Image (cartoon, rainbow, N blue to C red):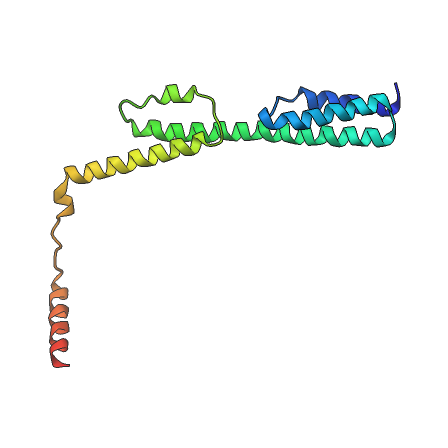
Length: 156
């Protein structure tokens, strides 16, 4: 085995062991396999560099996909906790937690929690109209100032 092949083997092993990145993975995986086949057919430095570059691009994509998946799960869990704190009957928070996380799921749950919070606030305001119709108490010094302002307008 040549020195270049010994150097390329762990790079290929580490990259191909990473979890698949979904549909975006296929073109880069095909490119990496073609570059590896090219190197195996003719093990020269230029083919080695081509294989390393293709494997690096595939590795970046797969690592980014793993990190985005972790971030999506964290965001979803945070928003589901927020939704659970609202304690709305009929909202199956634990069933939602079992669903797979995608990058938009956290934002959807955030929007749902925001709507439920707004609904709760509006319902509380409707149930307590006396708070909305609370009388404004006049401070003794304000009556005098209001009368002064009225008097000044009349003089103009």
